[in-house]
Length: 449
Image (tube, rainbow, N blue to C red; front, side, top):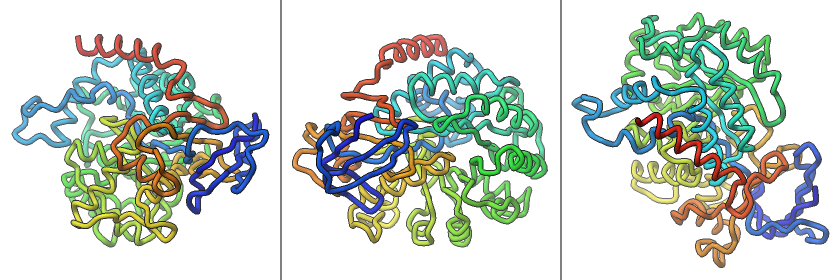
């Protein structure tokens, strides 16, 4: 493909001018040189940023967005995560493989249109077969987004090996089943299709089966990503202490050799000691601000975690938002509301919050086991080109571009998106968006009938 040229580009060390990007036939960046000439290059239509990873996705929940915002629907005196979960179970019971694929196809295109270039699909609706998982792979391949398929081990309804309830039987799995799914995915592996595992949570996976899964994974692929829900709700933390004698993050750090392969999703409720220890482990915290806000989960201790050197990324989770800029904006605002101060997530490179948030969260994409997260040689050519003609970007350069992208509230600033060297979005449009929308509307009508 021809060389690419951007007037403004966000590199690992900050904004650069006149960047020439060379991409090889395999979709990898081989050179990124600032201060270059645009001669013999394809000129990008606006500022370019590294693609963002959506670390945590339950794709089918996209169809639930906006349907659970009625007090009392759960017949609970207090609506919270646990009452929302009951509504999710009812919805999920009706879901067919074809509907799941239609919802995922629509979702993945929406992700691309907002600047996500990869997704980690934390998949637990198994139905005792591989079909549901492969439907998500098909949706990703149709849309062109890179995917990490993370089949979830889900054995119990709660701590103490309590049996799955009837409405949870679609999740039922054991380590052998999950490892067989990995073998099946391996037939489809590529730089843009990664396989890992997702033990659901310490309440759904007992210590013995968790260790069996991780040991089996070491034989299958010792570098594969491992994602797990941890410490999302205070009730979960309290029950974990009773059952295992430790808080969830504390237990994982003590017993599972948590390292850079791991992504602890949410990790919302940690003590200062846990926060520092998680940061030191090299794991990634998978933060989902819009879902955590929607469910009333709590606020992650981001400032202390960053101060300890912690790595993080963002995820859409239940997909009440499909926009990484909105996730990052809410992430910063939650810290401001807690600290009652402004402009908190900044580093040594720049005082700009937008630049800092995008660079740090994009680097967290390594939690998907994929070489991505920056515009740099050796990484996948995942690029997000903003629309320089949009009013919110008028007259902006450098840090002001990222600040406008994240904090202006605009939702139409992404123009073109490249994934692994291939353009998936052009002029704000995906070639399959109309077909995907028709399929999604049909699936939703069936689910809501």
